[in-house]
Length: 196
Length: 196
DNA sequence: CGCTAATCTAGAACAAGTTTCAGACTTGAT
DNA sequence: ATCAAGTCTGAAACTTGTTCTAGATTAGCG
Image (cartoon, chains in turn blue, red, purple, brown):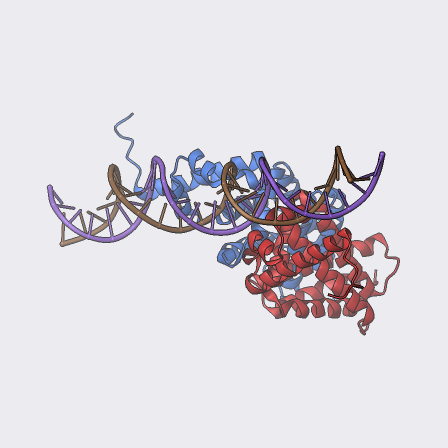
């Protein structure tokens, strides 16, 4: 190897490990969903000892929620570069969420793994879950184009976020059709119109 | 024992076993929530072999979802005897759901166990989860006093149900206050007003 | 350099959900 | 009454998330 390739610092190697773990988890989830993300496999596949994996992510749920954070951040970035073009806030948000839904549809097992972890998470993960909630709310507020929402609007945004998550779960479990997801998201988005 | 006490038939003994299992599961859940409902303990506490428990409920999630069905049916019965008295459908539904919320608050660990199982359930439980969804929808429709809802109304009802479940989870995980639950349920219920 | 604390590894061990098995006990049909 | 099928029991075994241990490696620092 070339001599000028400076050896990576410890922090770099740790960041690299973290990335490898997230990637391995994502690949396993893409293949077989929640149950296929087995900690031993994640460890082996990311070339890290089991104990190290648990140092980085204190539980399987933590790992999967971190994966979801990752995905949402990526999605948020993409959306900020391509803001939705729609009539009012309701339509823009509905468009955005259905776009996100289509993106998740491409890897349904991955989506299943992440969303199930998210709703299964107990108090020990509440901080990370909260972060995911905030990201979702941020995405919706961006789509609305509302920099300073009133409390009543924030409540409406939360309802939309709840609806999106629940509809996603129902679809992933085969209990709702895509049409139903679209309908319910659109229904919830009606709350975002500033009519009252 | 008195001679006239006829011996219970097989079906009766099975129904009795099922009841015992549900009761044992409920007691354990009341004490320690989801993780305290351990299948071995449930089996021992309901005087049934582990294999028998698994014959009645093929998984822990099935058991907990059945417990939720049980609770909802009871609640539905109670509500039908005491219909809510409110202005419009939105207010009546909001009242009803907040009443249900208060009922669940009395046994927060039980609620946590049941709701977490509900959202964690995978496809193998979809039939039972669907039944819970239908019960929730039925409760909401009853509160609305709407015997023949239009499709658009059904979508609004689903949004309300989603919101209620999600808000409940958020509260149980310590990520939302009761005030926030109340606000969000009320917000979602606005969709039930037949204004458009 | 040499020390100390932190990190990583390999692997065993533990916990709880789930499955399996052999045997005993019903039940229902013939 | 008897046979076949189904059910229940007790216990062991298996799986996978999680924890623990002992030793090797590394990083930061005087």
